[in-house]
Amino acid sequence: MYYHCPRCGKKFKSELGLLAALGESFGQCPECEIDGEFEFQNARVPNDAEYEEID
Image (spheres, rainbow, N blue to C red):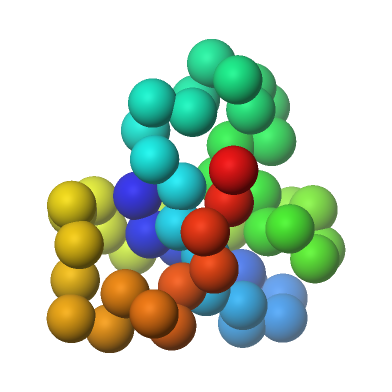
């Protein structure tokens, strides 16, 4: 799942399989710790390198 932060603009991604492990922080910006804005869900996209992987 791909997101961007509405505050700082950071782009980040996280696998749906990590939902249980990350809990409420799933989909949150790693910098600002606020909910990111969902962009799309896809296996991989051409500009994938622009998105930081959240583990």
